[in-house]
Length: 466
Image (tube, rainbow, N blue to C red; front, top):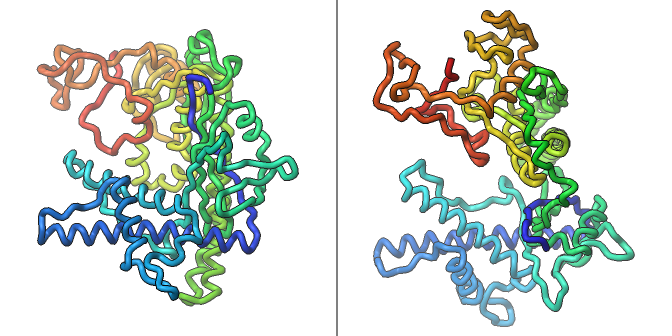
């Protein structure tokens, strides 16, 4: 394994037999049971601590594992017909699923306590999981003993399969040739596997991999990062790419799966509402509706993955704008925004550019790309969405609205604009007075981990210097 590594995930669809499917349900139920029982131990300890301050409360993942292991071997877990003390069915499932479920509870408790201490918005206390409304899943760690991994992908006789401990060999729907080649050459290592059940009826397998960095021939050189390409995201057109000179490179049209499936989605939702609660017909209607939602999500994710991989492969320097998707989702454009997958697009593009050694620049959220002229740099008034052609009142430059915004984004790395109300800056505050007493440095560019996570309100506002 090289020094530079990357973490990625590969997902496959399981095709279990009837016996294997029962075993998968048993393991998913065991993970849910361990989570709920560990949470019950935490709540009991918290109640006991109110009467006696010396009572310890298991809070971390390690303490929760020890507490659950003591409980499952005690008389509180039950006694079987032969008189053996402890959880009777614990030998029917893999013991790792208990530990991984309890570790997830520990992470939730740590998030709850850390946010309370930081004084920010408090995270909710973990709640009990139900089979009806929670995703049925469990996780298995990959252990190596004698140079052999517990998770074996493919065999010489059947390449589309995986061997899981306690579950045996389960067939896969997709081919594992690429993964087996990476494992054989030592360029990847399986960390753990997550098996989850979709409400539509399918079992999926997600393998978390620690893979080696991409080959140097697949990475961008320094010359590729010299020419930035701006990406302007929209609703009518998913994205428009242009360079700093205002030349449009390409337009990407979105499939809009939600808009296409909306009539069928309404019919199936109406059918579900007309079924009697608790009946078998209502369960079947829920499955049909869930499969349609799952298909919409699959089409959207496949489109975003395909386009981000292509853009990261062909362009070494990309510039996108930081958008407040949390605030925009509270407007009347929420359905179209959700169908466009703006936030997913930026997140995938960020790590794929990093894999290939490219550069992704995040333009400031208040950078006036839609009001600025890409030819002379003049910033005009706000342009309504119905106007699709940008016309500069200073130089008379005319260009498509989206193309002009993408060209302005491509020019962003060379722009310096101070924040509003900066000390001794040539800007004015809301009272049209010269500001004083604030820092006069340039506005800070957001980091990659801050992309698409901006809240609806910001105390700082930046404008482009004239």
